[in-house]
Length: 214
Image (tube, rainbow, N blue to C red; front, side, top):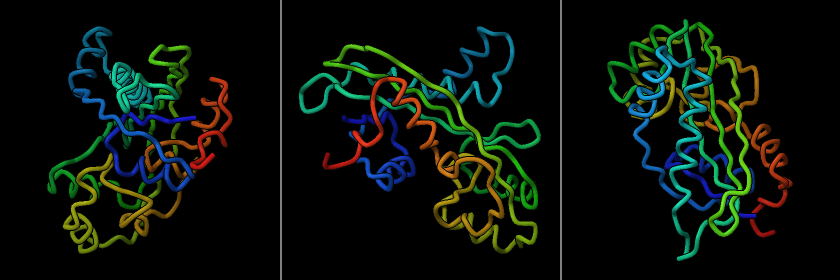
């Protein structure tokens, strides 16, 4: 069974590969900020973090349905995902700028927040949608209390925290700055593998069918 990843995230790709899956990659090209603005305008109220990541996960998966791979319509399971970090009720995506990353780290060190990851899975046969399933998952993340400002500055200087939700990773340079995680660790990377397995099962696909070489 082919998994088609509607994402340009290196972390999600690496996570799936580490789980024995070699997905086909299709860039969704979704304007995330515009999609959130439109949804909030329609509702007349802000989206909760779980709602936002789920909205964007679905938008990404649906955005690639008309794509072709090797000249053929998509066939398999299309996966869209999105993540955001929540601290004190504020939702944080990618900081992009060093000053923003620094401000976030100064506020979150020694504290605990929630990383939300949205998932939307669509089963397609020869380009036709035959089913879909999706849910958000979350994991709490606690940061080291004794984290020095010099360590924060050095981490920001690597550039890694600028392009990830919440300005941190657990599977790379940011891992030593995290003291505790409650929930599926892969959720913090960008995809909950246990939830993804459940969603695939709901669409009639057993997880081992994804493993490369089968």
